[in-house]
Length: 309
Ligand code: CP
Ligand code: NVA
Image (cartoon, rainbow, N blue to C red; front, side, top):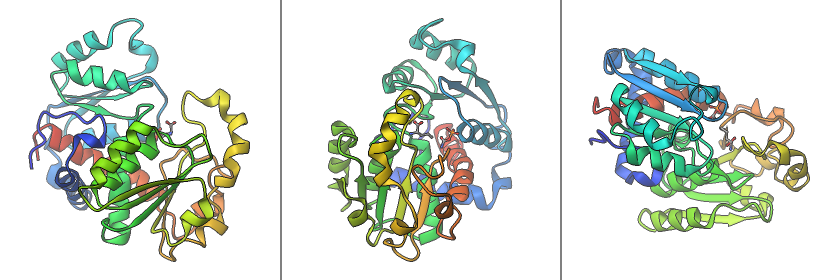
C-alpha cells in the first residue's frame, strides 16, 4: 500500500487500511532494523521546531541515521517560523533541499499551510490540535501487549488536547471504544469529536466523552494520560491543578481497569499530578516501550511517505 508523496497532518488523512499498514511495517522495522539500513540512503529529513522536544527530535533523528539518511534539526530560534520568514516560503525553500519535512508547531494551520506549499511530504510532529506520530507509537505498543486493537476499551483521562484528539482519530480508525474523560470545560474540540465519530461509524468504533473517571476506568484495556498543561499553557498550570486533580491516574483507578490493562503516557510526565509514580512503574505500564516505539513507528512512516516501502 503506497503512501508515497503524501503528508500527515492528522490521522484523519489515513484510511484504516493505511494506518494498519504503517503499524504492521513498524513491527517489521522493530524486529529486523538491518533490513532497512540503507532504505533512506542519501535522503534528508528537515526537522522544524517551534517548541521543545526530547522524544520527537531524538526518535526522528536516530530513525533517519539507522536507515542511512540524515536529519537536520532547526531550533525555534534558527528560522523563527512566521517572523523571519513566511511559512509558505519556508515550505517551498526547504522542499528544494530536503526529501521530508517534520514540523512541531503551535497553530495547526501552520502544518496545513506547510503541507499545502511543500513539494515533499510534511509530517506533523505535534501541533496544538493533533499529535499523530504519538498515536502511531501508542497503537504499536497496544498491539504488542494485547495482540489486537479492534474492540479494545481505550480510556484517556486529562485535558481534551492534541493527544486526546489523536487517540480519538486513531481509535476510530482501528475500531476501538474510546472514552475521553476530562474535567468539565476541558472536553475535546467539537470538530475533532464530530470527525472522529464520523470515522468511527465506518469501523464499529465508538467515541465517548465523560467527566466521570471512576466509571470510565471500569474494565479498561488501555488507560492513558498526558500533562494537564500543554506546551504554551505553562502560565495556566497552577490554576488547572485544582480542576484536574480528580482526574489523576493512581492505583485506585488502575485497579478498576482490567488486570492486564496497558498504562500509557506520551511523556514528559509530571509525577503525582496526572499520574502517580507508582502507577508508572507497575508491570501494566508500557511508557518506555511506547517512547521507544516512536522511533520504529516513525521509521515506518518515513519509509512509506518517501516511497521506500
Ligand atoms: N511525546 C513527545 O512528543 O515527547 P517530546 O515532546 O519530548 O517530543
Ligand atoms: N499535550 C502535550 C503533549 C506533549 C508531548 C503538549 O502539547 O505539550
